[in-house]
Length: 441
Image 1 (spheres, rainbow, N blue to C red):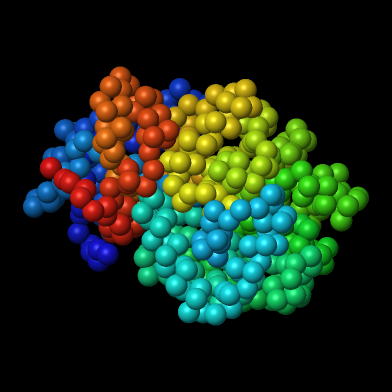
Image 2: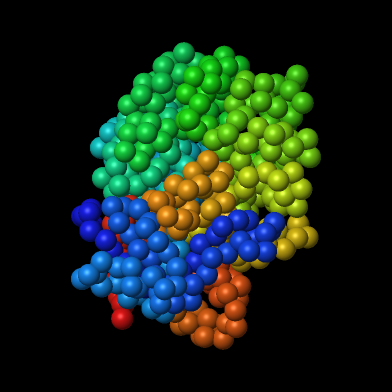
Protein backbone atom coordinates (compact mmCIF):
# COMPACT_ATOMS: atom_id res chain seq x y z
CA UNK A 1 0.00 0.00 0.00
CA UNK A 2 1.27 3.46 -0.91
CA UNK A 3 2.14 6.02 1.74
CA UNK A 4 0.44 9.42 1.73
CA UNK A 5 2.72 12.27 0.73
CA UNK A 6 2.12 15.98 0.26
CA UNK A 7 3.54 16.00 -3.25
CA UNK A 8 1.57 16.43 -6.45
CA UNK A 9 0.79 13.33 -8.49
CA UNK A 10 -0.54 13.18 -12.04
CA UNK A 11 -2.12 10.38 -14.08
CA UNK A 12 -2.55 10.26 -17.85
CA UNK A 13 -5.38 8.20 -19.33
CA UNK A 14 -8.84 8.62 -20.76
CA UNK A 15 -10.87 10.36 -18.04
CA UNK A 16 -14.57 9.79 -17.28
CA UNK A 17 -16.78 11.40 -14.69
CA UNK A 18 -20.26 12.90 -14.50
CA UNK A 19 -21.74 16.33 -13.89
CA UNK A 20 -25.40 15.26 -13.92
CA UNK A 21 -27.74 12.30 -14.40
CA UNK A 22 -27.68 11.22 -18.09
CA UNK A 23 -31.39 10.40 -17.83
CA UNK A 24 -32.21 14.07 -17.35
CA UNK A 25 -29.29 15.99 -18.89
CA UNK A 26 -27.69 15.96 -22.33
CA UNK A 27 -24.39 17.27 -20.96
CA UNK A 28 -24.03 14.86 -18.08
CA UNK A 29 -20.71 13.29 -18.95
CA UNK A 30 -17.18 14.59 -18.67
CA UNK A 31 -14.99 12.64 -21.10
CA UNK A 32 -11.39 13.38 -22.04
CA UNK A 33 -9.98 10.78 -24.42
CA UNK A 34 -6.44 11.92 -23.65
CA UNK A 35 -6.85 13.26 -20.15
CA UNK A 36 -4.82 14.24 -17.12
CA UNK A 37 -5.84 13.87 -13.49
CA UNK A 38 -3.83 15.96 -11.03
CA UNK A 39 -3.92 15.06 -7.33
CA UNK A 40 -2.43 16.86 -4.34
CA UNK A 41 -2.77 16.08 -0.62
CA UNK A 42 -5.25 13.32 -1.32
CA UNK A 43 -7.65 15.55 -3.28
CA UNK A 44 -8.32 16.35 -6.91
CA UNK A 45 -6.54 19.50 -8.03
CA UNK A 46 -7.66 19.36 -11.67
CA UNK A 47 -8.98 16.99 -14.33
CA UNK A 48 -9.17 17.66 -18.04
CA UNK A 49 -7.38 17.44 -21.37
CA UNK A 50 -3.74 16.37 -21.15
CA UNK A 51 -2.57 19.02 -23.62
CA UNK A 52 -4.21 21.82 -21.64
CA UNK A 53 -3.15 20.74 -18.14
CA UNK A 54 0.37 19.44 -18.68
CA UNK A 55 1.93 22.89 -18.37
CA UNK A 56 0.33 23.38 -14.95
CA UNK A 57 2.31 20.56 -13.36
CA UNK A 58 5.12 21.53 -10.99
CA UNK A 59 8.64 20.96 -12.26
CA UNK A 60 9.74 17.37 -11.90
CA UNK A 61 6.26 15.84 -11.76
CA UNK A 62 5.99 13.09 -14.36
CA UNK A 63 2.49 11.71 -14.97
CA UNK A 64 1.89 8.01 -14.40
CA UNK A 65 1.07 6.90 -17.92
CA UNK A 66 -2.09 4.79 -18.08
CA UNK A 67 -2.83 5.48 -21.74
CA UNK A 68 -5.15 2.87 -23.18
CA UNK A 69 -6.97 2.72 -19.81
CA UNK A 70 -9.90 4.69 -18.38
CA UNK A 71 -9.58 6.56 -15.10
CA UNK A 72 -12.86 7.33 -13.33
CA UNK A 73 -14.04 7.94 -9.77
CA UNK A 74 -14.12 4.86 -7.56
CA UNK A 75 -17.37 2.93 -7.43
CA UNK A 76 -19.76 3.60 -4.53
CA UNK A 77 -21.76 0.58 -3.30
CA UNK A 78 -24.74 1.75 -1.22
CA UNK A 79 -25.96 -1.52 0.33
CA UNK A 80 -24.06 -4.63 1.41
CA UNK A 81 -23.28 -6.80 4.45
CA UNK A 82 -19.66 -7.46 5.38
CA UNK A 83 -20.49 -10.33 7.81
CA UNK A 84 -22.09 -12.26 4.94
CA UNK A 85 -18.84 -12.50 2.98
CA UNK A 86 -18.24 -16.13 3.93
CA UNK A 87 -21.81 -17.25 3.12
CA UNK A 88 -22.09 -15.70 -0.35
CA UNK A 89 -23.71 -18.12 -2.84
CA UNK A 90 -25.63 -20.08 -0.20
CA UNK A 91 -28.73 -21.88 -1.56
CA UNK A 92 -32.23 -21.14 -0.24
CA UNK A 93 -35.76 -20.97 -1.70
CA UNK A 94 -36.31 -17.35 -0.64
CA UNK A 95 -35.34 -14.42 1.55
CA UNK A 96 -36.80 -15.50 4.88
CA UNK A 97 -35.49 -19.10 4.88
CA UNK A 98 -32.13 -17.78 3.64
CA UNK A 99 -31.93 -15.53 6.69
CA UNK A 100 -32.79 -18.35 9.09
CA UNK A 101 -30.54 -21.00 7.54
CA UNK A 102 -27.41 -19.02 6.71
CA UNK A 103 -27.43 -15.37 7.70
CA UNK A 104 -28.20 -15.50 11.38
CA UNK A 105 -25.88 -18.44 12.21
CA UNK A 106 -23.05 -16.76 10.28
CA UNK A 107 -23.52 -13.42 12.03
CA UNK A 108 -23.39 -15.11 15.44
CA UNK A 109 -19.59 -15.33 15.15
CA UNK A 110 -19.00 -11.58 15.01
CA UNK A 111 -18.86 -11.04 18.74
CA UNK A 112 -15.29 -12.32 18.37
CA UNK A 113 -13.13 -9.28 17.48
CA UNK A 114 -10.44 -11.39 15.81
CA UNK A 115 -12.96 -13.12 13.55
CA UNK A 116 -14.68 -9.82 12.74
CA UNK A 117 -11.38 -8.17 11.80
CA UNK A 118 -10.32 -11.12 9.64
CA UNK A 119 -13.54 -10.94 7.63
CA UNK A 120 -13.43 -7.12 7.46
CA UNK A 121 -9.91 -7.21 6.04
CA UNK A 122 -10.87 -9.69 3.33
CA UNK A 123 -14.11 -7.85 2.58
CA UNK A 124 -12.42 -4.48 2.10
CA UNK A 125 -9.62 -5.93 -0.01
CA UNK A 126 -12.25 -7.57 -2.20
CA UNK A 127 -14.08 -4.26 -2.63
CA UNK A 128 -10.84 -2.54 -3.62
CA UNK A 129 -10.00 -5.33 -6.04
CA UNK A 130 -13.36 -4.66 -7.69
CA UNK A 131 -12.86 -0.88 -7.76
CA UNK A 132 -15.24 0.08 -4.93
CA UNK A 133 -13.81 2.83 -2.74
CA UNK A 134 -16.89 3.76 -0.66
CA UNK A 135 -19.74 1.60 0.63
CA UNK A 136 -22.68 1.65 3.01
CA UNK A 137 -22.14 -1.46 5.10
CA UNK A 138 -24.21 -3.48 7.55
CA UNK A 139 -22.28 -4.96 10.45
CA UNK A 140 -23.95 -7.27 13.03
CA UNK A 141 -25.63 -6.62 16.38
CA UNK A 142 -22.19 -6.85 18.00
CA UNK A 143 -20.33 -3.64 18.76
CA UNK A 144 -17.14 -5.58 18.08
CA UNK A 145 -18.13 -5.97 14.43
CA UNK A 146 -18.41 -2.21 13.99
CA UNK A 147 -15.08 -1.54 15.68
CA UNK A 148 -13.39 -4.19 13.54
CA UNK A 149 -14.85 -2.77 10.35
CA UNK A 150 -13.89 0.84 10.98
CA UNK A 151 -10.42 -0.12 12.20
CA UNK A 152 -9.86 -2.03 8.95
CA UNK A 153 -11.22 0.76 6.76
CA UNK A 154 -9.14 3.39 8.59
CA UNK A 155 -6.01 1.33 7.93
CA UNK A 156 -6.79 1.66 4.21
CA UNK A 157 -7.81 5.35 4.43
CA UNK A 158 -11.26 4.59 3.02
CA UNK A 159 -14.44 6.66 3.21
CA UNK A 160 -16.96 4.14 4.53
CA UNK A 161 -20.38 4.26 6.20
CA UNK A 162 -21.35 1.41 8.52
CA UNK A 163 -23.41 0.63 11.57
CA UNK A 164 -24.46 -1.89 14.18
CA UNK A 165 -27.55 -3.84 13.17
CA UNK A 166 -30.56 -3.32 15.46
CA UNK A 167 -32.81 -6.34 16.09
CA UNK A 168 -34.95 -6.85 19.18
CA UNK A 169 -37.53 -9.38 17.94
CA UNK A 170 -38.17 -12.10 15.35
CA UNK A 171 -34.57 -13.23 15.35
CA UNK A 172 -32.53 -15.82 17.27
CA UNK A 173 -31.92 -15.03 20.92
CA UNK A 174 -28.17 -15.04 20.30
CA UNK A 175 -28.55 -12.01 17.99
CA UNK A 176 -31.26 -10.14 19.87
CA UNK A 177 -30.58 -6.80 21.51
CA UNK A 178 -33.05 -4.55 23.32
CA UNK A 179 -34.55 -1.30 22.15
CA UNK A 180 -32.74 0.68 24.82
CA UNK A 181 -29.50 -1.29 24.63
CA UNK A 182 -29.34 -1.06 20.85
CA UNK A 183 -29.89 2.70 20.91
CA UNK A 184 -27.29 3.15 23.64
CA UNK A 185 -24.71 1.06 21.76
CA UNK A 186 -25.44 2.96 18.54
CA UNK A 187 -24.98 6.33 20.22
CA UNK A 188 -21.70 5.19 21.76
CA UNK A 189 -20.50 4.05 18.34
CA UNK A 190 -21.59 7.32 16.72
CA UNK A 191 -19.51 9.25 19.23
CA UNK A 192 -16.57 6.89 18.72
CA UNK A 193 -16.50 6.70 14.93
CA UNK A 194 -18.72 9.19 13.10
CA UNK A 195 -16.66 11.74 11.16
CA UNK A 196 -13.46 10.41 12.68
CA UNK A 197 -11.11 10.36 9.72
CA UNK A 198 -13.16 9.09 6.77
CA UNK A 199 -15.59 7.00 8.84
CA UNK A 200 -19.33 7.74 8.77
CA UNK A 201 -21.92 6.10 10.99
CA UNK A 202 -25.20 4.61 9.77
CA UNK A 203 -28.10 3.94 12.15
CA UNK A 204 -29.08 0.44 11.07
CA UNK A 205 -32.40 -1.20 11.97
CA UNK A 206 -32.14 -4.39 9.93
CA UNK A 207 -35.70 -4.27 8.66
CA UNK A 208 -39.07 -3.52 10.20
CA UNK A 209 -40.00 -7.12 11.14
CA UNK A 210 -36.97 -7.50 13.42
CA UNK A 211 -37.54 -4.28 15.35
CA UNK A 212 -40.28 -3.48 17.83
CA UNK A 213 -42.07 -0.17 17.66
CA UNK A 214 -39.98 0.91 20.64
CA UNK A 215 -36.75 0.20 18.78
CA UNK A 216 -37.92 2.00 15.65
CA UNK A 217 -38.98 4.99 17.75
CA UNK A 218 -35.60 5.16 19.49
CA UNK A 219 -33.85 4.82 16.12
CA UNK A 220 -35.81 7.79 14.84
CA UNK A 221 -34.94 9.81 17.92
CA UNK A 222 -31.28 8.97 17.42
CA UNK A 223 -31.52 10.01 13.76
CA UNK A 224 -33.02 13.36 14.81
CA UNK A 225 -30.34 13.91 17.46
CA UNK A 226 -27.53 13.18 14.97
CA UNK A 227 -28.85 14.53 11.66
CA UNK A 228 -25.59 14.13 9.74
CA UNK A 229 -25.46 10.38 10.40
CA UNK A 230 -26.87 7.95 7.88
CA UNK A 231 -29.86 5.65 8.18
CA UNK A 232 -29.86 2.33 6.35
CA UNK A 233 -32.43 -0.44 6.24
CA UNK A 234 -34.38 -2.73 3.91
CA UNK A 235 -37.82 -2.08 2.44
CA UNK A 236 -40.20 -3.93 0.11
CA UNK A 237 -37.68 -6.52 -1.02
CA UNK A 238 -39.84 -9.63 -1.13
CA UNK A 239 -43.58 -10.30 -1.41
CA UNK A 240 -43.65 -12.60 1.63
CA UNK A 241 -41.71 -10.01 3.63
CA UNK A 242 -44.22 -7.30 2.64
CA UNK A 243 -47.11 -9.47 3.83
CA UNK A 244 -45.31 -10.08 7.11
CA UNK A 245 -44.81 -6.34 7.64
CA UNK A 246 -48.51 -5.72 6.96
CA UNK A 247 -49.44 -8.20 9.70
CA UNK A 248 -46.99 -6.65 12.17
CA UNK A 249 -47.90 -3.00 11.43
CA UNK A 250 -51.57 -3.11 10.34
CA UNK A 251 -52.09 0.64 10.77
CA UNK A 252 -49.29 1.62 8.38
CA UNK A 253 -50.33 2.58 4.85
CA UNK A 254 -47.36 0.72 3.38
CA UNK A 255 -44.08 -0.93 4.33
CA UNK A 256 -42.25 2.34 3.73
CA UNK A 257 -44.78 4.19 5.86
CA UNK A 258 -43.64 2.15 8.86
CA UNK A 259 -40.28 3.89 8.73
CA UNK A 260 -41.84 7.27 7.99
CA UNK A 261 -43.96 7.07 11.16
CA UNK A 262 -40.83 6.77 13.27
CA UNK A 263 -38.83 9.59 11.71
CA UNK A 264 -36.58 7.34 9.63
CA UNK A 265 -37.10 9.09 6.29
CA UNK A 266 -34.82 12.05 5.67
CA UNK A 267 -31.74 13.03 3.73
CA UNK A 268 -28.97 10.45 4.24
CA UNK A 269 -31.54 7.64 4.61
CA UNK A 270 -30.75 4.75 2.27
CA UNK A 271 -33.44 2.14 1.62
CA UNK A 272 -32.33 -1.15 0.09
CA UNK A 273 -34.36 -2.81 -2.68
CA UNK A 274 -37.61 -0.74 -2.97
CA UNK A 275 -39.13 -3.28 -5.37
CA UNK A 276 -42.77 -3.28 -4.26
CA UNK A 277 -43.22 0.45 -3.60
CA UNK A 278 -46.12 2.33 -5.18
CA UNK A 279 -46.27 5.86 -6.60
CA UNK A 280 -47.09 7.41 -3.20
CA UNK A 281 -44.10 5.68 -1.66
CA UNK A 282 -41.73 6.96 -4.32
CA UNK A 283 -43.20 10.45 -4.02
CA UNK A 284 -42.60 10.37 -0.27
CA UNK A 285 -39.00 9.28 -0.81
CA UNK A 286 -38.44 12.25 -3.09
CA UNK A 287 -40.13 14.63 -0.62
CA UNK A 288 -37.91 13.54 2.25
CA UNK A 289 -34.64 13.24 0.30
CA UNK A 290 -34.48 9.51 1.03
CA UNK A 291 -32.62 7.36 -1.49
CA UNK A 292 -33.01 3.91 -3.03
CA UNK A 293 -30.24 1.35 -3.30
CA UNK A 294 -31.00 -0.94 -6.26
CA UNK A 295 -29.72 -4.49 -5.71
CA UNK A 296 -30.26 -6.46 -8.93
CA UNK A 297 -28.01 -9.45 -8.32
CA UNK A 298 -29.52 -10.28 -4.94
CA UNK A 299 -33.04 -9.67 -6.22
CA UNK A 300 -32.46 -12.17 -9.01
CA UNK A 301 -30.75 -14.60 -6.63
CA UNK A 302 -33.61 -14.64 -4.11
CA UNK A 303 -36.36 -14.24 -6.71
CA UNK A 304 -37.53 -11.06 -5.01
CA UNK A 305 -38.63 -9.03 -8.03
CA UNK A 306 -37.59 -6.31 -10.48
CA UNK A 307 -36.93 -2.68 -9.60
CA UNK A 308 -39.10 -0.22 -11.54
CA UNK A 309 -36.75 2.46 -12.89
CA UNK A 310 -39.50 4.35 -14.72
CA UNK A 311 -41.70 4.68 -11.64
CA UNK A 312 -38.77 5.85 -9.50
CA UNK A 313 -37.57 8.30 -12.16
CA UNK A 314 -41.07 9.76 -12.53
CA UNK A 315 -40.83 10.81 -8.87
CA UNK A 316 -37.17 11.89 -9.25
CA UNK A 317 -36.03 9.64 -6.41
CA UNK A 318 -32.28 9.58 -5.75
CA UNK A 319 -30.99 6.24 -7.08
CA UNK A 320 -27.80 4.21 -6.78
CA UNK A 321 -26.59 0.68 -7.44
CA UNK A 322 -25.58 -1.85 -4.80
CA UNK A 323 -24.20 -5.38 -4.72
CA UNK A 324 -26.01 -6.51 -1.54
CA UNK A 325 -23.37 -9.12 -0.77
CA UNK A 326 -24.00 -11.82 0.47
CA UNK A 327 -27.42 -12.33 -1.19
CA UNK A 328 -25.77 -10.50 -4.05
CA UNK A 329 -23.46 -12.86 -5.87
CA UNK A 330 -20.59 -10.53 -6.76
CA UNK A 331 -18.58 -7.68 -5.24
CA UNK A 332 -18.17 -6.22 -8.76
CA UNK A 333 -20.15 -3.12 -9.61
CA UNK A 334 -19.54 -3.91 -13.28
CA UNK A 335 -21.36 -7.21 -12.90
CA UNK A 336 -24.04 -5.38 -10.91
CA UNK A 337 -24.51 -3.02 -13.87
CA UNK A 338 -24.88 -6.06 -16.12
CA UNK A 339 -27.78 -7.31 -14.01
CA UNK A 340 -29.33 -3.85 -13.61
CA UNK A 341 -29.48 -3.52 -17.39
CA UNK A 342 -31.42 -6.79 -17.60
CA UNK A 343 -33.81 -5.70 -14.85
CA UNK A 344 -34.66 -2.57 -16.83
CA UNK A 345 -35.24 -4.57 -20.01
CA UNK A 346 -37.50 -7.05 -18.23
CA UNK A 347 -39.55 -4.14 -16.86
CA UNK A 348 -39.87 -2.68 -20.37
CA UNK A 349 -37.40 0.18 -20.05
CA UNK A 350 -33.84 0.80 -21.19
CA UNK A 351 -30.81 1.67 -19.07
CA UNK A 352 -27.96 3.23 -21.07
CA UNK A 353 -24.41 2.43 -20.01
CA UNK A 354 -23.66 6.05 -19.14
CA UNK A 355 -26.58 6.01 -16.69
CA UNK A 356 -25.27 2.84 -15.05
CA UNK A 357 -21.83 4.35 -14.51
CA UNK A 358 -23.46 7.52 -13.18
CA UNK A 359 -25.52 5.51 -10.66
CA UNK A 360 -22.34 3.80 -9.43
CA UNK A 361 -20.45 7.09 -8.96
CA UNK A 362 -21.98 10.57 -8.83
CA UNK A 363 -25.52 9.23 -8.46
CA UNK A 364 -24.48 7.30 -5.38
CA UNK A 365 -22.58 10.29 -4.00
CA UNK A 366 -25.68 12.43 -4.43
CA UNK A 367 -27.81 9.78 -2.76
CA UNK A 368 -25.43 9.94 0.21
CA UNK A 369 -25.35 13.77 0.21
CA UNK A 370 -21.64 13.63 -0.65
CA UNK A 371 -21.55 15.40 -4.00
CA UNK A 372 -18.32 17.37 -4.17
CA UNK A 373 -16.66 15.04 -1.69
CA UNK A 374 -16.61 11.77 -3.65
CA UNK A 375 -18.00 10.45 -6.92
CA UNK A 376 -16.53 12.97 -9.38
CA UNK A 377 -13.36 14.82 -10.36
CA UNK A 378 -14.44 18.33 -9.39
CA UNK A 379 -11.61 20.32 -7.83
CA UNK A 380 -11.36 19.60 -4.11
CA UNK A 381 -13.04 16.20 -4.25
CA UNK A 382 -11.29 13.38 -2.45
CA UNK A 383 -9.03 11.51 -4.86
CA UNK A 384 -10.73 8.12 -4.86
CA UNK A 385 -10.36 6.74 -8.38
CA UNK A 386 -9.88 3.57 -10.37
CA UNK A 387 -8.08 2.53 -13.54
CA UNK A 388 -10.23 0.40 -15.85
CA UNK A 389 -8.62 -1.73 -18.54
CA UNK A 390 -10.79 -2.15 -21.68
CA UNK A 391 -8.48 -4.97 -22.80
CA UNK A 392 -8.52 -6.92 -19.53
CA UNK A 393 -9.79 -10.11 -21.20
CA UNK A 394 -9.43 -11.37 -24.79
CA UNK A 395 -13.15 -11.02 -25.45
CA UNK A 396 -13.33 -7.52 -23.99
CA UNK A 397 -10.26 -6.45 -25.96
CA UNK A 398 -11.75 -7.77 -29.18
CA UNK A 399 -15.08 -6.03 -28.54
CA UNK A 400 -13.67 -2.67 -27.43
CA UNK A 401 -11.41 -2.48 -30.49
CA UNK A 402 -14.64 -2.22 -32.48
CA UNK A 403 -16.36 0.40 -30.31
CA UNK A 404 -17.28 3.55 -32.25
CA UNK A 405 -18.24 5.82 -29.35
CA UNK A 406 -18.15 6.21 -25.57
CA UNK A 407 -21.54 4.61 -24.98
CA UNK A 408 -20.43 1.45 -26.77
CA UNK A 409 -17.21 1.34 -24.76
CA UNK A 410 -19.02 1.74 -21.44
CA UNK A 411 -21.66 -0.78 -22.46
CA UNK A 412 -18.97 -3.36 -23.24
CA UNK A 413 -17.29 -2.73 -19.88
CA UNK A 414 -20.61 -3.08 -18.04
CA UNK A 415 -21.81 -6.19 -19.86
CA UNK A 416 -18.48 -8.02 -20.28
CA UNK A 417 -16.42 -6.63 -17.41
CA UNK A 418 -15.67 -7.83 -13.90
CA UNK A 419 -12.91 -7.47 -11.29
CA UNK A 420 -10.25 -8.23 -13.93
CA UNK A 421 -10.98 -4.85 -15.53
CA UNK A 422 -9.80 -2.97 -12.44
CA UNK A 423 -6.10 -2.36 -13.01
CA UNK A 424 -5.58 -0.16 -9.95
CA UNK A 425 -7.58 1.45 -7.16
CA UNK A 426 -6.63 4.66 -5.36
CA UNK A 427 -8.08 6.00 -2.10
CA UNK A 428 -7.33 9.56 -0.99
CA UNK A 429 -4.62 9.66 -3.63
CA UNK A 430 -2.90 6.46 -2.47
CA UNK A 431 -2.73 3.23 -4.43
CA UNK A 432 -4.55 0.60 -2.37
CA UNK A 433 -4.85 -2.11 -5.03
CA UNK A 434 -2.96 -3.03 -8.19
CA UNK A 435 -3.79 -5.96 -10.41
CA UNK A 436 -0.88 -8.20 -11.22
CA UNK A 437 0.33 -7.52 -14.73
CA UNK A 438 -1.20 -4.06 -15.13
CA UNK A 439 1.06 -2.02 -17.39
CA UNK A 440 1.86 1.64 -17.78
CA UNK A 441 3.45 3.24 -20.81
